[in-house]
Figure 1 (spheres, rainbow, N blue to C red):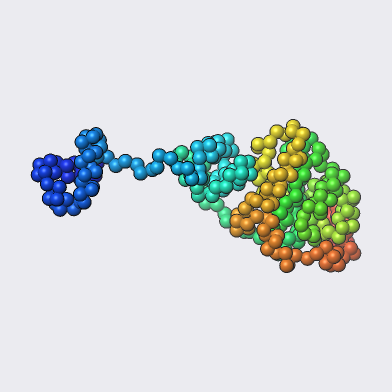
Figure 2 (figure 1 turned 90 degrees about the horizontal axis):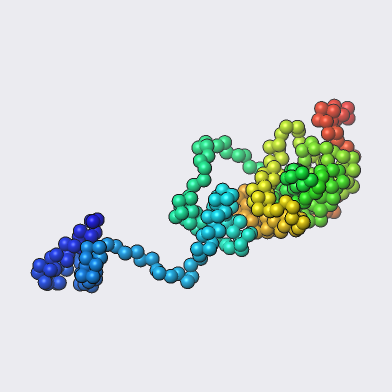
Length: 321
């Protein structure tokens, strides 16, 4: 018996002894309706009737979280180990359910799944940077998903706007096809393209294509993937949030990837953008973003050259000039 039950039992015993409700209320500092309520409960259920009852309504027609939604959340948490923010994104993308991360966290806490596996307490704080306007630098990389399935990704350094593609091989021809898609689907002109030193990017036809479209080619140094960090992180996002729930043999995988790309650019909030979507970031910088004719006017073909994949050889050739 807790302290509240003992106090209420004292009221009942005092009332049974004196049979004077006014005296008991004045003595105990309670109202008559309160005394009546607990006396009736005591008569009906005995000492157990003096316990506090939940005030939660029996039904909640306007409740936002239904048992089905809670099941979806717990299933995603168990299968894919996602945090509250990613669960919010996945519920919107997969089930068209809009819930805030704090609401999802309450559901996880209530079901004793509030924490994922522990992480190191100390982590070096990343130094975030981004180019001033969309298109100033676009990072491109290729990731092998499965045999005969290569994932191309282009990420704008400023807005995080992305273009994705799937090809059976990573070749110069497929790279040119992907670059044509990038130009067509990005809502702003491209000034520079940054890649690693993969052979598919250094092919002569690829570099000639960039020069023809007045785009500067800026490959990074060997063994420095951190310089291409945004597109590397993009691969991880795709592997965790898209490919884990897809059938890689699906003949419509290209269509599913296009739907995921649209969701990412238009609906998925990005933490590095302060909760904005890439599309919102692009619109925010519309006034500062140059047009294609301005980019072409500033491009100097004489200042560009065909670069070698071998970094040491490329440095030696650069010094000759």
